[in-house]
Length: 276
Image (cartoon, rainbow, N blue to C red):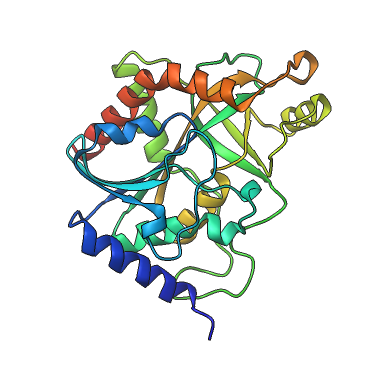
């Protein structure tokens, strides 16, 4: 007999709640090179993904592959230190399974982070970008298939995928902390190849400011489940089609690592302000 999505969620939640007594209100998904934020968590309980029923395995460099529960800036949190990607061969419903689990654990807000290429000529490598909106260019959707109406609606509204209140809070906190931030539209592609010059020119003309290989599936499921969402992108390289240069994943992680002090400062300050 096939195990239902709800049964899989229940099994994962049972394992996590047996291991950690934290009741998180905020979930965070940490992208390439940004997982070090998990080291800031107080009274941390770390659970490797392979110990959680039905969790996929993270196979990408820069993704530690564990769930971390504890307190960050006085907020009870659950962090994904490493995410899953469509290009790893997983279906998008598998990629987004942890979002269902975090929602079942009790989170009300999801903070998604990623490393991406900057298509906006006003950006520079090392910038942080608050995500205003996204374009799903993966060719798939995590909600395709039979819908369970007890989890969410068949046709979820995405008119405000990234919660306006949280976007404004992020900008206010960044200004108070003297952290320069950009804002823009994130385009999600399937990967694993980086874009060709003309693909980048097309995506920019469609309204994209940054391009990456994650985030959008998780945001779709988060909004489906009624969670508030904040998205933060680390611009790790400039993806200007007319000026495109060769790029490696190692370069992406290296720039994300250099940016992480400001990233950590911003996220911790946002969490502290959100609960005050």
